[in-house]
Image (cartoon, rainbow, N blue to C red):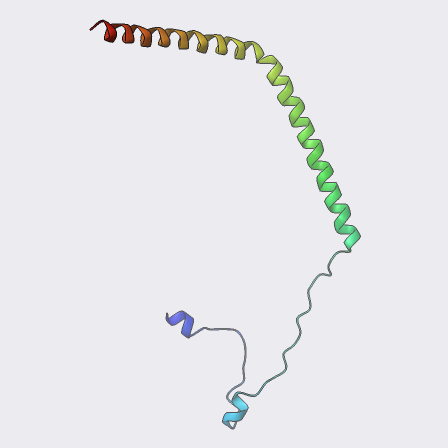
Length: 106
């Protein structure tokens, strides 16, 4: 709470040489702050944006090519995994049916 009430700043307000209470609250002109660097031209911004899009498109295209090559190599592995999962499902279904048969026999 103390930090919000007593802020320390670098500003030199020069309140020591003020004579009356009216001068304390007097409006003083403020210096305008100018930016250190000029804003780039609008055409420059558009060309930089187009360059960034082009770079991103070429990078994603190369990534898709690498992914396509790796997928074509792993199709055999995927096929084996699918067959294994189907066989496991059939085995588990057989156990469920056997359980139902045993429950029905009681």
